[in-house]
Length: 540
Ligand code: SF4
Ligand code: SF4
Image 1: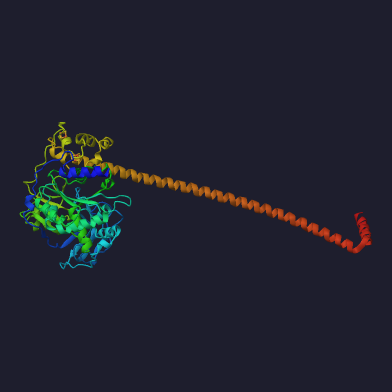
Image 2 (image 1 turned 180 degrees about the vertical axis):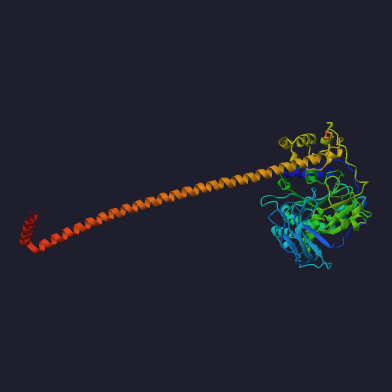
């Protein structure tokens, strides 16, 4: 079985595009890759949402008015699937309140706000140069404490993905440098500029996972990044750098794993179930910084692009920097933009305001002017052309999903594997009727989750009610039993007392008789006669 897998892997590496469907949208990558990255200015205010990752929001451990140093932990992970948050620069905590966050709904959510002091003064760092002496658990703790989450966009806490479980062995660690969505180039640039850091991060990850082999994947439209990683990989054994065809959505984790290994991640399952772990290349660089330098995740590469900026490029921005500040630093005017999109044009979403901050998962900001934004398309009826099914990388039936989602027949939508949809947008992209298919799927998923949450709450309430009823009944039964026992004990005691009393009386009588007899014996027969006479006399 293992041998078969290895042969398949080599064959796949020679011809890696093995997933169905996919599309070729215009790339728009060259605009932001002509120049290297620059470090962003420190903004006056850093806005740090407590929920920047998959899982539970972090819990603040600072108060308004506290002075904080760069790298200081200001919110702790709340639960296993959560991530700590650190101060990206030194300053004073000025607010802990609801602020606009990057979210499709434009919602506000709890944030910690730091008024920066411009000194950018680091707190104490604890680098671990001799990390090879540490076991996997200790390494995961360092990565967890550094607040590292997947930087490719998903935001899953990275230490969890480095913990496949006690009895699971990992064959392959995949480093995802595919970056297939148009406009986004931050992984391309970080691979060119930080290939050494990425490689050291990979070495740490492999140590933690005990992975047998490692594959770094780069889309073929990034030759410089491919060369940089290839040069670095030569220094390390068992690391292959693989070029994959430029096709969207090649960078999606499940598609990449299928293309490289020939294995399919089970529906609703995890890649670790098939012996594979996949991390983003920028995450590997963050792991290096956390372990070698003791630095938590406080900044990241962000692509600032779109026709709304005169100098599109990649910026190394502090987490919490308002997006409008970065647009200005790329010679854009936030006030004149018609839209700001976080992420790419396929899976990204529009911000309600440019004041929302960069978060750990912000890989790209597209500043759009009127010329980028096509007027709202006229949605036409579905013509059953089947184009959507042809491009679906999961081999779903998007048209059926659309019908059932639209008619709110969510059971049917789930029968057609709604939750396997990765929301890549390929179906919407090719639909000649301009139907916003993904919006229907997202809405349907949201409704199902809301129903499930409501049902879960109702189940909890019902369980509580039943538990309370059972407790009341149990307490009443116990009370009745206590009462019965008490009554029985009283009755027994009474009986005993009665018996004791009659016994005592009998004893007294017996004693009296015995005493009388003893007295008679002492007085002799005459006395007896006298007594008898007296008695006889008296009786008369
Ligand atoms: S691509 Fe659009 S029009 Fe064609 S079948 Fe799919 S939903 Fe219908
Ligand atoms: S959005 Fe979903 S249904 Fe549409 S192509 Fe992607 S995976 Fe398939």
